[in-house]
Image 1 (spheres, one colour):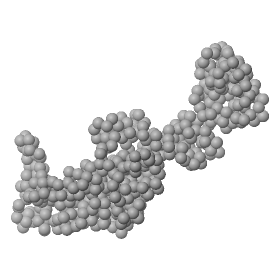
Image 2: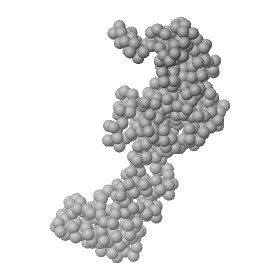
Image 3: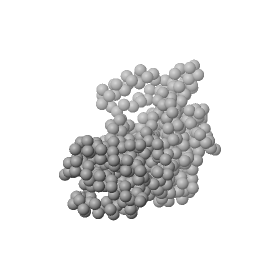
Image 4: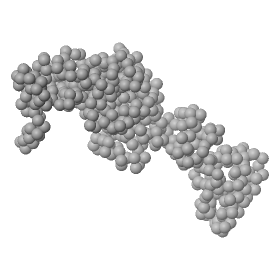
Amino acid sequence: MSSSIPARVRFAPSPTGHLHLGGARTALYDYLLARQTGGQFILRIEDTDRKRLVPGAEEEIMAGLRWLGLQWDEGPDIGGPYGPYRQSERKELYQEYARQLIESGNAFYCFCTPERLERVRTEQQKNKIIPHYDGTCRNIDPDEALRRVKAGEPHVIRFKSPQEGSITVKDVLRGEITVENRTIDDYILVKSDGLALYHLAAMVDDHLMKITHVIRGSEWLPTLPLHSHIHRALGWDEPQWVHLSVFLKPTGKGKMSKREAADLIKDGHSIFVKDFNDLGYLPESVVNWITLMGWSYDDHTEFFSLPDLVEKFSLDRLNPSPAAINFTKLDHFNGLHIRDLQVTDFSRRIKPFFVSAGLNPDDATLLKIAPIIQERVATLDEAPEIAGFFFKPTVNPTAEELTAKGLTAAQSADVARKCLSILESVTEMTPEAAEPPMRALVEELGLSAGQVFGIVRTAVTGQRVSPPLFESMEIIGKTEVLKRMRLAISLLDAAG
């Protein structure tokens, strides 16, 4: 169940790469819980891993969240009462709490060199022992350890995990999780460069920022006992822990990872938020889609807007089972949300795709086109493929494309001439004026509508598949329709 008190939640990405679906879903659930309870959604940048930072990644993360409609209440760009909101700017805070842990006997200075640790690890693997820190520095006299630190000896700070008994931690999705303390490693909290690792930094930040719920991926479950121990060692109340389901590959076999991204993009799919707009997806449909990969409202409702989700979301309907990424479902949701747009909004959203296709769409014509293609596109990038001909000075079908099935080029030219005669005679190029005499011609010629209208469609649009023909001709205008018909006739005559 969702909390009745205002929730303070944080999305805390590392700017080490693109914002992916898993991160976007975590941010979305954070946002929904905060908005539903009248709480705060906080953006915190976990950038202590300086070697892996990617220039521009922080800005891309923010742009992706904004595209999805997830605006934060506190963050590095807008500030807030618990800043700074970048971990690299909070180094002294973490060191202060690391010292508290050392003074209380819950952490220790470790002087083991990387070379020694590697030798120990190799030996453990050889003996089929799970690699772990062997405790060499756990029991160094604190005064001696402090003296070595002050003398400048390289060191890290490790958490002193209890070696007796067990710890029980409650996860909202998975219930109580009990782990034997002797299986918990003495994890590094502060590296030799003085920068804290996630295990300390995130716990300190969550406490100081008064975070009520930690929603994160299930990859953090193995270190949940450590994080709980750190809270307890510092005398802090723990947040509610919520570890989400993992995403599986579309096949349902194996965990989804960033490595598959290159293969996906070849098929017009991606796991990175930055790509969805260019692929023609609406943010509304992506939100709808990823919400339902791990949460459900009931067994039949599937269409949700963001306001719907704010109203209906609850933690107790989250599902811990792995969820396969289903791009067919995304296309389905995208279609539903495209149909749900106001025509003016749909027109506005398809315009950039015409521009990207090298066309120069005017808003008035786009507004006329929008209603006749809105039911026909699954993704916005299909719009110029279906309707680009409206903005081309000429279309260039071949005689072969213009030749109707079952007819020769000469016969098709004769049919086109009869159609041209009718279209020349109508007072205005509207469906009401043009369609009845054209259908009468079909009857008179003893041909199918597909044969006759197929010739006209290809002549006028340059395509064998197009939006409704007579509505399209009205938008193109009588002068241009007649010009394109005459060109088609000349092509057929030349081929016949």
